[in-house]
Length: 256
Length: 255
Image (cartoon, rainbow over all chains, first blue to last red; front, side):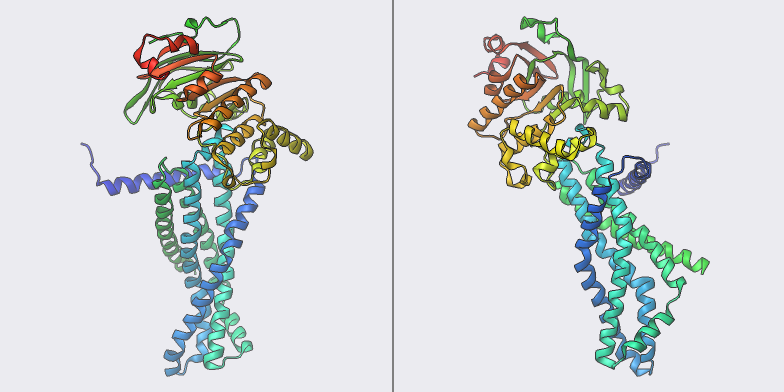
């Protein structure tokens, strides 16, 4: 009996299989010399440094708005002193990693998808291959390594900025002192908040790089495929960030 | 269909055969692009492949360099069976071949210098000074020494093709594969590129296989021309021989 699946299910399964193969090839190539150190560091710069502005602004606004929204409600219950604790735990555990993860999926995932897609369309990837260079190692391994290592750093940085944003809002609207804010934030946070939240960001980074590279590297020949690669990269990477977060939360709840 | 397009041209067949394709067949998306391709290319000669768009000319080149795998048939280049090469052997083999893409295929994010450095630093153990000297020498061969620090976006179509050629030449290949080198260029630049093919031929004694529609380019550069029609080589010979061909399809290219 032939099992006929709806087209979207077939496409989804093929996509998952393609991503699995791509990830498998990444691990095969990543630890095999020659290593493309120069290009990897260039990608650290491209992915990390060039995202700092966006991530800083987003982080600041997250912290600022979160504090601002909480002040009127908690003032009613006389619980303003709990705001730093609430901000620090919610930002470090969940809001910071997920929102910055989604921002990175949009900016970095689409950028990688479009860049590799256009390289494919203009035969630059073929040109690398015929010049006896392994384009997968040069283009894919370097980018996935860079996103895996840089996105966690961006998220830690954005969390810090968000906490500063939260302080500024509290200081302006409820006169919170910096000493009290810092001591409350640090006494509220434990390693069980920070470590699982940081570990999952490595998976976010890997997923964003993997999806962007997979879409771009396998783009078809037409120029239209560049737009499709960028668009699909954002959608799939964002979805993966949410799914990884859900799994990470479940695992954290089991162990902690 | 002709099995040995070289025979008709009265070519000296004593030389070493560097490319030997036999019964090559390729199907793409259900269409039989190449049905039965047979071609021998001798060391040092320039062979032009003429044919309509979509007739499989570029596919033939991609099979020679191992970018595509034939469905059946053999592709022997420099005494190696290309479809049977492993990844490492294929990479080593490709250092002996140069492929000039239709668009130039320069790496957009790199300057001209970095484009030329890219294959050099990966395949040759040279000092920084030697690399710089090799790059400058190669750029001077294509007449673009001044463009060394430019980005690809600052170059014209003809310049991009010259830089694409320079990037290939830095590794001193034995065989050059040209994919429509004059497409999209004005007549004067097309002639310049054709003369450059001749110059490379004279200076480096490379074997060239050129895919083109440009009959002027074929006239200037060809030792021998083969005509691709319906997935097989329909005719072969020198420019003069084919110009007088009785076949209407072949003559169509020369009118």
